[in-house]
Each structure stands twice: as structure tokens, then as C-alpha cells.
Length: 193
Image (cartoon, rainbow, N blue to C red; front, side):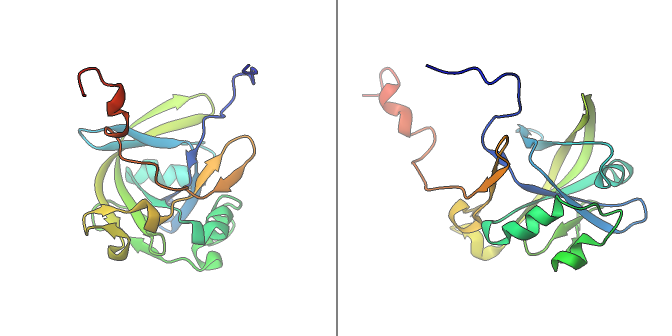
């Protein structure tokens, strides 16, 4: 029997994304966000929800741009740190030993050490309670060449993205490959035999 847990943010897993923008003084800043995901295929777009009180938010809006650096397992402590302190008080890139790289397609930095980067132009924002849901049109995706599958697509087994469990506030690795989408369920499709 299932037990009701109430109306809570317990959907699992959530991504661990370093959302980066230039702040209002033009300095690179990054924060960790877990409230996000792909929201459209054409144009390719994603959403990330950020509290307006966060130091990263005004720069995202002012520059109409942000990047998502997908946090890999091997940099878990550095990723966690990005979500623990404010860029108002310290240079998080310097403290964590991370390298900001200026995007060549949007006015925002990304984190060089993170293997997968998504560069976005801010196209919509919606107030949803205490968060602003920001919709970014994906202008480019960059991936370390040694993390590509057949030189074409990011390989999750090489990128090793972290995931987050809301509620317990725990980070996890992605886990093993289970099969291929739109293939594993064929046995249940009528007339597929």
C-alpha cells in the first residue's frame, strides 16, 4: 500500500546543474539548481527555476542568457559548494578551483571542468510561487570529446552526471544502463510480434 507524503517536491531524481551567468558587475557566477528539465523539442529548450533572491538570477535576466554545466560525479564536492555560498560574498570559481569560460554563443560563462555544457538564451520567465521558472532556448551544447558516444552524443557512462534526491538532500550517481528507449517496451505494443 502506498502512503501519502503530502504535496512536496519529491519527484526523483532531479538534475544537479551548475547554472551560470555574469552578475550585474560582469563577474562570472554559478549556483546549483535541481529544479529543471527539458521543456521543448522545437525550438530546443529547457527550464530552470531560481529564486529571485539568488545572486545568479539578476544576471540571467539582465544578460538574457545562462548556461547549464552538468555536474559530474567526480566533482560532487565542488558542485555542492556552488550551492552552499553566495557569489555576493566570494568568488566561487576561485575558491573551488573552477575555470569560467565565456560562451561563444550567449553572454554567460560555463564551467570548463564540467564535461557537458548547455548554452541558453533566456526567452521566457514565469513566476511560480517563490521561484521564477526561466525558459532557455538551447543555442549550443558542448561536450568534452572523450565523453562522446561514437563522437556524436554525450555518453552518460562517461559524463557520469550526478542526480539529486529531494527530501533527503542526497546526491547519487546515475546508475547502470537498463536498455534502449522505444525498444524495451515493444513486447507490449499490439501487433509487434
